Length: 396
Ligand code: AMP
Ligand code: MG
Image (cartoon, helix red, strand yellow):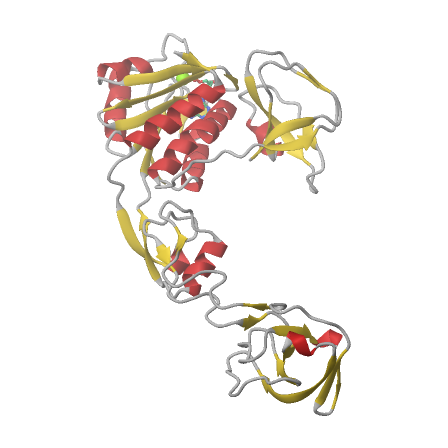
């Protein structure tokens, strides 16, 4: 079951998108809702704007009177309502955010007027409707402003504030089990001996899972033997999603697939034509999805980001998991062998005007990935790019 990048991603979206069910919800305060996924529709509690609202400081006028000299009959500030109406030959001084007085059909910016005493001279025309927002143009009472499945950022939370929604229903964060495997691993707080390494994947996976909307649950390191791995896999299946790192290549002690198969797993793919990260397992067992991510740290990070993240997002309640590839011009000529979709460490310049491929030592090179702020995403059928050519970029 070897898939291309696009096929594998479509498979994850399809499987998790169709088989997630009964997502739990919780009620929280809007100020705590940044990054959470809305589980109820948000409706307009009144028309927006609720009155014809001036967009400028200036004078409320009847457009038919212009150009001309108008009598100023009063003023209206934000938060007030002008009592009375504007008749022919009259104007009301108005501030941004104030309701347009009856009778007026336009606002003239103060910069375009000349005032002397109670008269204002305006030597230009102004179309009816200019410089104010009619009542209800942004939204009508009862209109849906946000739909369930929306991730809440600052503007969505501003909208919650606008409609007075102080508490709301969001989806509960899915619990994602993180299961590192490998006899060579020691916990981060321990001193590795000459042949050992620290378990860095558990940390990157936890951070990436949390960023995608999950509550990560880091399990102890599974040693490369059947019983230890099986016991921890079973423990991990109590969570909503299981992410394993390592133990899925062709090595003699790579037993993750065997353990999962024995537990009754269905495998949707076991290999993807990408670099880094070719051995990559996705399936479901006992009603839970799992990913067997390759153990090399850069592979773990990339495969989590481009595949497992989508599953986490969907289990978090998003309607659509997105992976936006941007385009940027290459800073230099660039070559790659064909055959794989590659995600290579790169640096997008501070102003976004070019992208520089970084040198790296392959998928164990965490330091190179840390120097990068993006990945170049190559197409599998192209081997040469010249400086200035546009190339796909995935921001880190
Ligand atoms: P594996 O996929 O188990 O064959 O591991 C591939 C490479 O990744 C090996 O060099 C491992 O030592 C390394 N590796 C595996 N798991 C981790 C981990 N949790 N943290 C850091 N490196 C790891
Ligand atoms: Mg291993």
